[in-house]
Image 1 (spheres, rainbow, N blue to C red):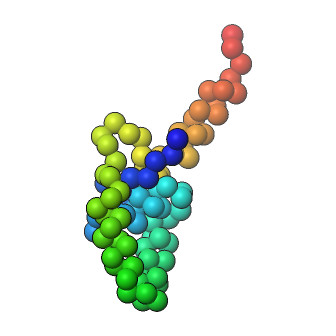
Image 2: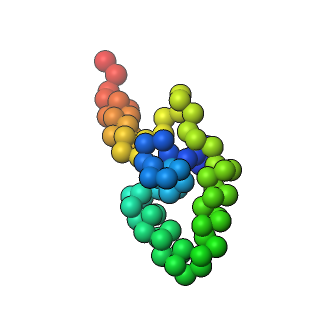
Amino acid sequence: MKRLYRSDKERMLSGVCGGLAIYFNVDPTLIRLLWVLLFFMNPLMIVVYIIGAIIIPIAPEGVFYDFYEEPEKLEHESEIESKPEE
């Protein structure tokens, strides 16, 4: 099951945007730009960000949670499955 965590690698302030980017599998810069646009449309978005920073936990040490490594991991798993057994 997919879980939402704050990112410990893709972070600028508290890792909320980086965590959302990893969860939705998009570039963290796009989430940050969207967040800034939403903030200018509604300044209360800063409160939503602060609540997210408080509620969303940081990714635990043993959890595989890396935006850039996941496609390679999936590619590697498909290579293992496609090899015929000898």
